[in-house]
Length: 288
Image 1 (cartoon, helix red, strand yellow):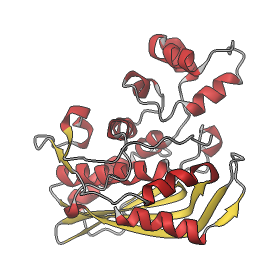
Image 2 (cartoon, rainbow, N blue to C red):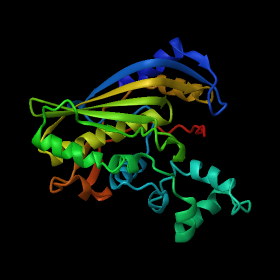
Image 3 (tube, rainbow, N blue to C red):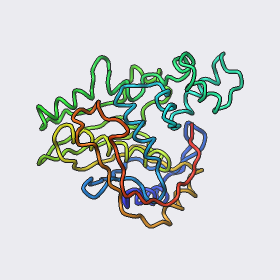
Image 4 (cartoon, rainbow, N blue to C red):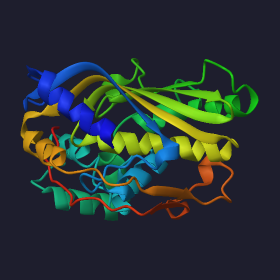
């Protein structure tokens, strides 16, 4: 994953010191691109252990069009808990519950989950129902019927609904491209948290590319990751420097159940990661 480490070095060396919405502070550059050939292995970081279980379940959650964290909580995925919990703390129902209490209520009380677990019309809602359009189904239909189209675009950025979202989408637009029987995908990400978010985003969209390639009868090509505001939070500098001190290891292999022919039929058990040999995980606080 040299491309990721090159990004880290670039931002540390060239980044401008900026304030931000969270009050944490960042080192930031504007405009950066990485490319990953999926024939060279699955692009999951080896310079720190990345929680692939969370990535898989989050992507399946997007594909379903779900926007309530209950599915994620039920599968012990914590990556979206902070935002609805902060909203819950501002509600009249809040009685001093800690995060663990909140998560337990989401898991065990359907009414509580329905009221305090929904994030608004975030990614899955836009993918499957953007002003009445199922964008994901449109992409699948175009890939099968009109693969040379330059209009195979899916957007998560819906200005009419941004204010209803717990967090406006960071990964905002994807475009598909077919050449010589290979499917490639480019992601435009408006805001890129390099330490915590970007490793997840790389793996998530590479996985989506592999899944769609399989169900459309194409071979996986290249994942192109274009970043807008690419930043390292000021409280993640030591973690990034630790990764830069580590020598990347061979990429793992990701295998899909070959019997799955519909994108909407994939389950967690249909996705297997093999030969993943990362360095130990590195903790870092999420900026909310």
